[in-house]
Image 1: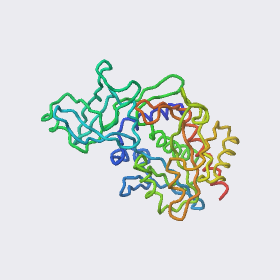
Image 2: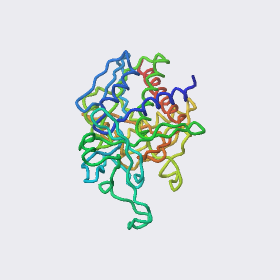
Image 3: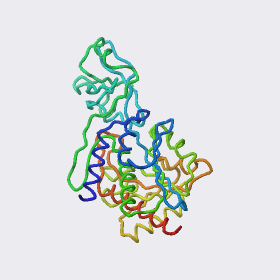
Image 4: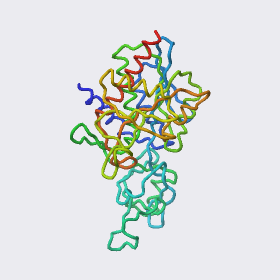
Length: 344
């Protein structure tokens, strides 16, 4: 099996699960299947911690958030349409006529966001409705809808994982199932290398609500260094190579005032030594990722950030390169292996 085929199988398996912020518990059960023989526990916010043991001389914390954006049911209209509000940074511009899935009491109900035909719309061309003004049609009257849907149910984009050409894939919720896949591959690569490494893998909840899960999950961790893995912006139409980086050219190593400079420099050195393609992402202040809170957790943790470029972030058609995922995992694994050898 090729490395990218392995990545594709992991990502496909993860993409089947819905893990909207605050509703991540069932998804952590799926992640556990990749770490069957390791020590695992979930905290009060449903962040999963997986502990592997080595020499005990140098300890790593690796973090990727597991939650995805979505919607929440707020009301049912007299005509049986479902009113919603956003969970996380939902882009209302892309929601018109969007296919959705309402999860209620263990069942899934398909729906579609209603769209007013342009012939009848009084809205100015090029403007989008607010999320609070949108209505989801599930084909039922109010009485019927109230029997199957409850206020507080979560709503997900209903778009499947698909392969594109040139090792690219598209799906909803790749932010941040991509990061989860990277961490799983790091674990697998370290096992293949027989690296004697102390690594705490943290799969943190509620990142999309303000980095909440990582604040708690990293607080009492005895780590010498941390590496956060997330997605970042890829170049695309109207996105230049300053705001985004090229897909298919390797992981993004972050350079930022809040990121430990030595970690960034050492990652660059490892990339060049092992001939792993990489790109530099510059953040002049906060990174907008869990690195912002992990780095100041407890008494502070030296923290690095590796990101995978992604197109169409926070939409139902996020696009990513399988090669970038595998290269990100390889970079982190090689970095850990080098650190372990330095502290033998």
